[in-house]
Image (cartoon, rainbow, N blue to C red; front, side):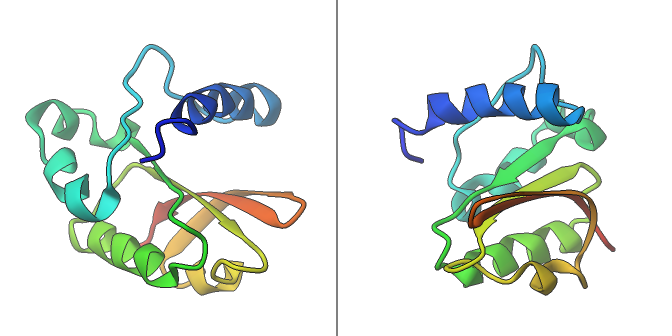
Length: 124
């Protein structure tokens, strides 16, 4: 929800698509939502349900809040979310990457310094 960081995120999404040949949200909305408060409501909007498989959720909570990662992933499993989940975290402060192996099918892993990005889908 950091308003200064959000424009940087939008630019980085484009860069990730260009540099790593992954799908990005071209000509679509990038929304800045508090995941714990808004995720369920957002995912069940009529316009989103029609394109659920095209939705990308970028999860980037404060790295030390390990519980937020778990809560969001469990919620996505419960509702059988079929879009992509991109998780950014940190090797020192964030949850270990291995923590996600039971819940996610990781299609791409990008490590830059101490930060990592997992591009994945949720395992039902």
